[in-house]
Amino acid sequence: MTLETMMRKALDHGEFELYYQPRMNVRSGTFSGLEALIRWRHPERGWIPPTDFIPLAEETGLINPIGEWVLYTACAQNKAWQDAGYPPFSVSVNLSVRQFREQNLVELIPRVLRESGLKPQYLELEITENLSMHHMEYVLSILHEIKRLGIKISMDDFGTGYSSLSYLKKFPIDHLKIDQSFIRDIQDHKEDHSIVKAIIDMAHSLGMIVVAEGVETEAQSALLREMKCDEIQGYLISKPSSVEDIEHFLQTVK
Ligand code: G
Ligand code: G
Ligand code: MN
Ligand code: NA
Image (cartoon, rainbow, N blue to C red; front, side):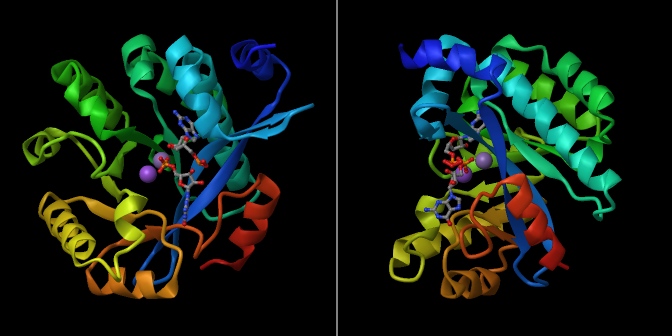
């Protein structure tokens, strides 16, 4: 059976699962939210990583039903956490470019919020820079409608795409997430250090909250704090974790 055929069956058979990875405020050490990341547990082949199937899902269009499942599941899970008495926090969901082109997000998102019972301020959508390059006027109009619903928007993997600073200024971005490739060698490579510092200062001047991704060590965290980065995400705090494991994590945070 091809991967595509397997993927078509996976949704119906409940083989997808969401894992969650926390973000933290790097100054106060307070918990600031979770990112939902899809996982596929195939009954015979075991775990299939998203890098093996998300690109294929994007090529075939299956990213649309899969993305809808992710959105609904993340919202319903977040509502369930609130109902269970956890202090409210936001969960972010990754959106593919194709979902912007082919799904009526302005209709889909309010419907998912209604069905899950989650308030819009607890949902955040992650987009990538490449989205901003295509059909910019169209994408901008959708983003503004999404913002009007009260939902926050993150620019993900920042620094790896093609967006120029003049594009960035036009986008209604709440969080700018610096790609992990710049964070990895931040201590040893002067260039990476300079780039990260420049991104942080620029994002702040545009009123954005800056998140560093892929933070693995205390030394990186300390350096980012010095550089006035706002939030960090990465293995230092927690790997992406199952619902059960993230609930254990949530018991330990302030
Ligand atoms: O979760 P990491 O574990 O391996 O994710 C690998 C890649 O897959 C990342 O680029 C991440 O943004 C992407 N990804 C993970 N979950 C989703 C999802 O629900 N939707 C989309 N579109 N991409 C996802
Ligand atoms: O593209 P996006 O930023 O959505 O995907 C996040 C990816 O980064 C996921 O594959 C996730 O598992 C991975 N990731 C998260 N934290 C770390 C980290 O500290 N180190 C490394 N190497 N990868 C990480
Ligand atoms: Mn992301
Ligand atoms: Na990223």
